[in-house]
Image 1 (tube, rainbow, N blue to C red):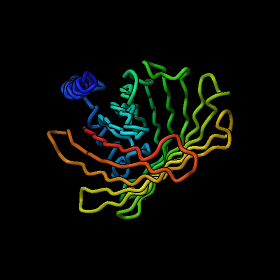
Image 2 (tube, helix red, strand yellow):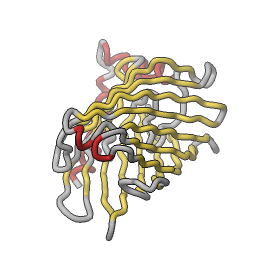
Image 3 (cartoon, one colour):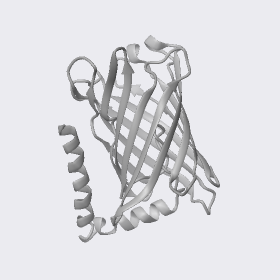
Amino acid sequence: MHFIFRRIALLLCLFAVQRLSAQEGYFANWFKRVKETQAEQPHWLTPLFTTTPRLEEEFRSDIVWTPVAGGTNMNYGAGKGLELIPTKQTEIILGVPPYQVPLKGSHGFGNIPLLLKYRFLTGNEEHGNYIITAFLGGSIPYGRFASEYGSVTPTLAFGKGFHQFDFQSTLGWTIPTGGRQKSGTPVAYNTAFQYHVLRKLWPELEVNATFWPNARLDGDKQVFLSPGLVAGRFHLWGRLGLSIGAGEQIAVTHFHQFNHAKTLSVRFPF
């Protein structure tokens, strides 16, 4: 259960950061800058599987149940973590290594994920309800379930809202630092369709697709239809809030690396 305590410790760090914001200089204006930055963009919620083009400041942790023959593999954290807005146009995500519990074999951590977002254009609900952002993701090999090589993933993300409806999309290309003859350079395209109802509910349907243009899986593709529901944001204390969601990824292509994986997502925006 030590991974749970690690996440609790990170939440306590958030409160410490809020205290430090009273100091002079850069940190004194941190939350003022975050508020102004987020006021300029749409106020949609982050989807379950598609990375939002919005800039967020929150701590997020997911749990994923993946069915396998005879039982279920567990993934605690799913590579989510601390999301911060250091400047008006940028966000950094410091991912916590996922703790994986396979049905058989030893438990352990996976790669360390990192992500940088740069927001190019945006308008809130009164000014066009849209956003265009670029990502630069990275993966650092770590732990028992580390990949042989790290990777870099440049991504273009965009979204548009129409009254209560919005869609958010990403198109990314994963480039491993080595071993491309095996893993190739897969291309991922994700789109989440959301509808805002009853003030706090965001039902969604996502399309999550991955294509392999080369290497061992050359020509293969997998596509999931992923229904889900996210509820929030609920006020907890001060700037701290809560959003919670759940969904399932259902394979609709003959080739797929898993099927019917279920996700529970908990976020603490601040």
